[in-house]
Length: 239
Length: 300
Image (cartoon, rainbow over all chains, first blue to last red; front, side, top):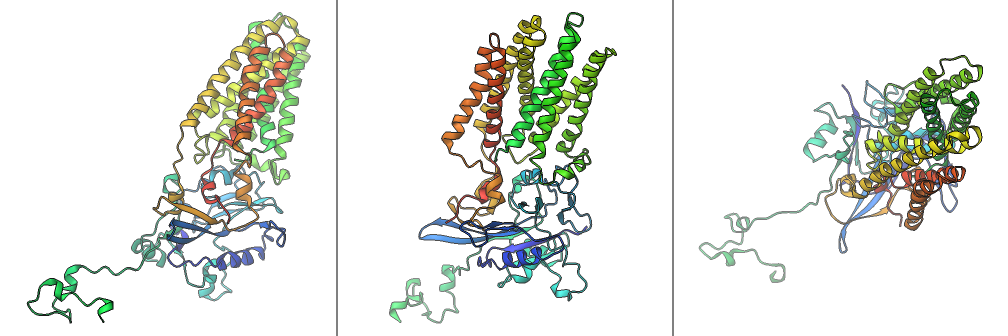
């Protein structure tokens, strides 16, 4: 069974919103119709987006970290939004696990958005149907595109390459290896939705030196037979 | 959650209609010969008007009402779909009940019992629409179904008392007692849900929502500055004082005042109770804290 998904590396994301704009550009230009944009140049612009980048400050000044957090449909393995739909417009594809909305069947009752704990479904105010990330289902299978372009728009747009795309059920895929080896995690595991999208945690690059490493025989400042304190490397001011 | 007027009207109107129908059938069961058929025909008309108004109100909740027929298709998994089937079925039974009384065709009690079962089924469907949303802890409890039923029965009995004042004055005393008892019962079950919800602790936190283990996390942006569907649908947007005011209005309007009024002034009791139930339904939505709100805590 295939389960396509995104893996988002929070260690790499710089919060540039390129994924947001490319997602909007691709999905507002498709056959499904434009995504609403109310007052785009007004004081309070609002509109439909399948993907949003949020920013959080973690810690207390001056020890803070800024975390940019892209959020889109997680294409859950057990999506709570699907069984509640009264018309069958909301469905999960057996073939690749993508959760989709059939815009021609949706009545805009918003019940699916209540069932989703992540707030990733947005009712399009103009079309009055529920919309959400499709993993760019209209481009990842497009054989007119070169093979390396058959990826979701957000993935192609990301300048630092913080977004990976692939089959999380294939243990040898890039995304599965990233989840396995770099601490990939799911959002709100307590909700029991088993999200397919995963996030890679922030990591700090630190060099951990043990004391014995300073005292080893390969220390060029070592004086044979001298006590430990004399064999420490010189501190910066002494140089 | 944002309380939508269409849903407040739908659930309170059909609740009163369902309760009135069940009250009429109980009246027929206990005092069949002594009540003239006109009482049941008129009562059924009120039931159908209330359910019809509720149905019309519900259409205003939909983005595409012309596709509403599709909602009957997913009854295997969706309680909303089941409600969409149960409501017309109940209205059909109520219509048949009224016609049977009007024409004197007989079998009225059998149709009435069937209609009452459909009415109870509709209460279950309506309640389960909310109780089945697992992420909303305030709703995901059997008490939600119980409360939709008890509050519907109470307002239906109050309405029956008010209506009997015109159509069957000899029933007013007994119906007022029933309305008093059912309103008291509804106050107990709704109170139990309020107490339960006051003890609730959210299972999801900003830490689990982001997967970041740190006690201090502050949102700086939410991906839009002018709001989004997420800030409109899941927040009631009123102050804590306003919400408390609505709760007070709900407790007095839906339960306390009707208990005082129903014996002496049944018409006023029903009007006050209906307004109180609208406030109660508003609070029912406002008290539900959706976990998605964790992602929409601030814009700076």
